[in-house]
Image 1 (tube, rainbow, N blue to C red):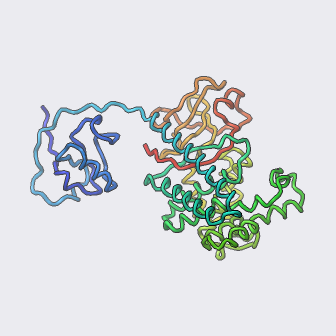
Image 2 (image 1 turned 180 degrees about the horizontal axis):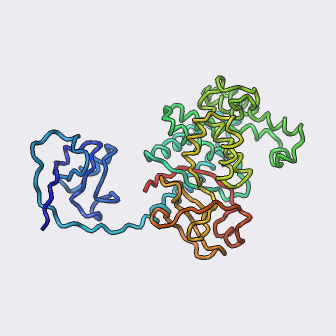
Image 3 (image 1 turned 60 degrees about the vertical axis):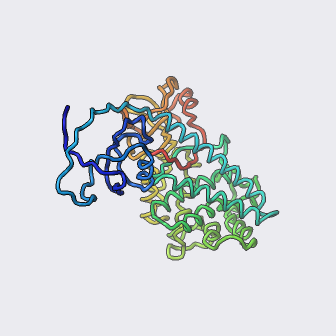
Length: 400
């Protein structure tokens, strides 16, 4: 039997930063593999709860107390780790994200319905909704985005608000803003378009190119309508109200209603302004990658460069919802962001829409070849991929 020099330590000596190997088969512990990098205290506590008294140290020996000689142990027979199919786990995580998104939209709709008749009740329920969003954001150290939807043809004010909240909170998370700022951003995002409910449907539902100058000016009053509605309750924090009033302000002074420049726009408001601008472009073009390209190329002067860079990093080169051609000539819709931007998790089909499947490109020798426009797809592919459906985003804690 082969022997190897490994450092064996009691579980009580484990510290964050070590990479350890568990003396167990993968079927007897909750981790994906027996080799575990200790990045969180909760991992250490989980291992302490297993039926083991020691672990093997693979990396990070310098973090251990000094020992004169490594302990020579007899290496047990190598346990062949079975290949795990992570697709069911990913599907489950996306299903949870979808359920959470729909619940958030419904809860937001309830809050909107109470804001005039029961402002205190609306505030309490909005605060609860925000805490749920915050909890979902921080479930993972590396939250990802997944595509979600409400099943409706048009994106509602509440659906738009949740998706903007998710994007804005992801930006805030990347910037390591405080939990207070994240909460203000979430609350402001939820309510940022509530003033549109004061705008007649005949105006609000028109395409922008069909609006008269008078109707455009009336629509541009929605930040003021929303601010006045919420401010008179005396319940909402100033930073959140600033988001509602100024979410259409741009750092170059071209926004409304007050044509503010960068120095006069709060960072939290700038974050929501960027997320809202991208979402608006997305709803207009229905193609995430094109919307991101337009934002990057033609709206860059409207937002701080560092914020745009963060948004691009969060969305990736191929944001969820992007339709792509793969190197095996399949057609696919990106479902979830991953660390490897060229190999996201996708829902794919053949050119005619047949052979649908959920795929982990990181487990295949397949990459994204190019982005496709909707008019390049067959009717079958459009139906299979649901390529015409409106796109919204929610947090996903699946990080394999």
